[in-house]
Image (cartoon, rainbow, N blue to C red; front, side, top):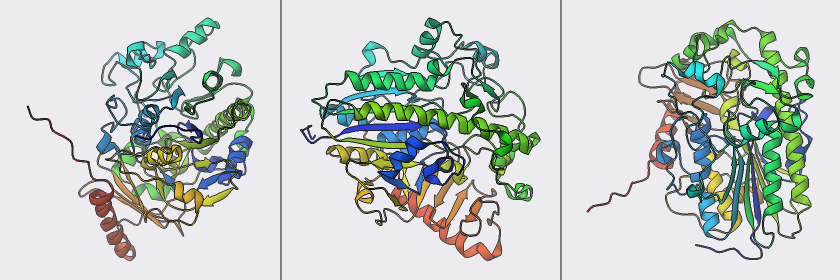
Length: 486
C-alpha cells in the first residue's frame, strides 16, 4: 500500500444529515443563507447529479466509507452494524500513514439498544433510556480506521450529553429523532454556543489544532442536522419566516398513482417513528417546517465557515482538499411528504462539492454515486484502492467537467425498491405486481406525473427496466465472499 510523502494532501470530508441540494445558494436557492458553502463551491467543482446509494442514513454512510452498495457491505438499514472488519477509506489512509479523526455523527452502529417493537421503546426514548453511547471504547481503536473520535448521534447520549450536563443543560429536554412527534418545530433550550452543531465544529477544530502538521491528516466533520425534528437554537429559529418560504411542489391527483410504500407513509398515524399523519398537514405546516429547516442549514453554514477559517490558518503549506456532501435529502413538504426513504430526487439527489487548491469554480453534470466517494478520496491521497469496490473515482470529473462517468445511477432501499436514474428520467421498481414509478424530468422536474402505466411511456419504461437490470448485474453485483475451509 502507498505511503505518505511531502505532497500527500490533507483531506477534510464535511457532511450533513438530510440536506437537500436545492436549499443551498450554489444549487440555485434564492432563499438560502449559505455564504460559506457557496464560497467553497465558487472555488471548487459542483456536481449537479450526485446521488445516494440508499435514501437512508446508515446504509449510505457505509457506502461512502466502503465504496460498496448496501447489499454488498451489509449495513442495509438503520439499526444494524457495519462489520468492524470492513475495508474503509479511513483504514486505507491510516495504514498509509495518515492521521485520521472524526467529529459528529458516524452511524455505523445502532443508536438504540431497544428495538422499536419493544413496548417500552416509545416511553424510554423521551428520557434517553436505551440510547447507546456512540463513543468507542479505548480498546475499539482504530475504529473503522479512525485513530480519534468525538461522536454524537441523533440523540444526545455519550460525550455530548456529558458536555451539556457539565454546562447545566438537560440533554433530553429537546425533542430528538426517536421522540415524538418528528415534525415538531421549536427553539432549542440549548443556546447556540452549546448546540450540537457548534460542539461538532469545536471538536473538529481541536483535532485540526492537535494534528502533527508535518504529516497529512484526514478529518471527517459530520453534522447531525438538518435532520428532523426541526429544533434549532436562537437566532436561527427566527431567521426565516414561514409566510415568506416557497410552497412545496405537489399535486393531490398524483397520490392515486403512488406506490403502496408512499401511501403508507402519507396516511400513517400513531407512535411510529415517522407516523405523524402527513395527510392532515396543511401548507402552513410545511412552510413553518421549511423556515426552521433553512435556519438549521444557515447554522451549519456558519460553523463550516469557522472550520474553514481554522484550516486556512494552519501552520502548514500542505494542500488541503475539502469534500462536502450529505447522506440523503429531505422531502420537506414536496408531494406533501416529509423526511426520507422515498426515491424522489429531493431525497436521492444530494450536494457534492470538491475543492482542490488553485482550482477555478466549475460545474459537472456527470452522474455520480455515494459509492464513488471512497475511490475518489483514495486517489486524491495517492493511495491505491483495494479490490472489491463498486464505485469509481470521480477525480477525472474535477479535472475535466465534461467527462461522463456513467449513463445512470443505481439506488436501492432496505426493502425491495430499486431505482435507475439518468439525467432524463427515473424508474423505480417496487416489487412484482406492485405499482412502480416512472418520471421524465424535462417536462416534470418535480416528479408529479407518474408514467408507470402510461401507454405513451411504454418504450421508456422498457428501456429503463433494461438499464436497471443491467445495473443490477454489472454495476452493483454482490462481490463474491471468501469462504474459509478448515
